[in-house]
Image 1 (cartoon, one colour):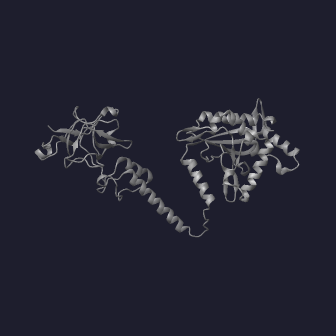
Image 2: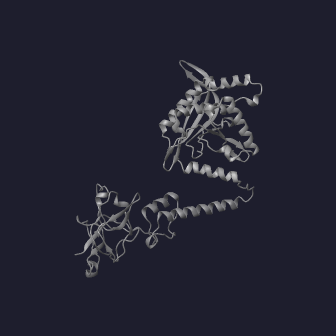
Image 3: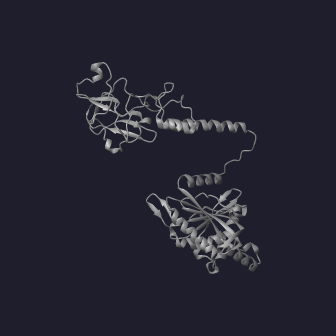
Length: 412
């Protein structure tokens, strides 16, 4: 006796359901547990498994890929060896108003829908082109006209990958037209350094999970301390700058929050046992990030002397690869350009980078008084794969305390 294969009751709305494709061909043997066909919605593709065994017989007017289907709709039959399918005997396709309880699919794998609508199948076609619901939704989002696209799915059905390829092709054409229209100008060759910077910044965005936290810090004590250093040091060129001060203070905070220097690896999160801080240097060739090794073991003046030497080497083209390796945390300072807060790009495998904004006089409420204070903006970007938001916020709080309650003993 032929077993009817019908559309099972699945856990997503059948209003947007469509037949995806057969996973078995007409006339082939189907065993219990074999995947028979795919049903699609705008949210999920569901492979449907057979409860029964037999030879698959698909009627001529069975749904095609992309056709909309409803619960209980007849799709095909399972027959025994030598048995004819009902549509061969009767010369017509038998329709089913609702699904028998004993037919098909391990429906328990998907939560049932609260309500079911049955009725004849509606066919989703435009100019003879079949398209999956997910592909149609993506086309609508990207503004792609899919009526003329040749689909890569079964029987030419348009899939999501076809829509993305069409959108990419359209963008390439638009860019090409724009380049042709902008023929007057100057093309700057991409240097090896520029290409390396591009690759590293791209990786910092697309191979990590960057998140940025921002805060304001009372830097009045920091400003006063640096002024004292300038007054005590006749050679202005050797006076530690704000970046030097923040390198030392960040190293102090990092010792209390070692997870901030963690590095994502395939087999776990690696925590280095050293604190080497990179700092961004603007050069004609592009941004470079030389490294100050073992910051906790160096005095402020040693750090300042090293950053000044590394900065000169970077701008003179004298930096080597060794000077830019081994960093565990990065600081980039755009305060001198009048920038307040910004999102920095992670330098993998490092998991965090501190963006330093400008120091600006602001009116601040202290107790019952409004007083002028020097406020500093900080932006901490971190890799959420390695560090959660709360630990990152605690690190910022510790760094804020180090800056606001500056103890010269921390900066020998």
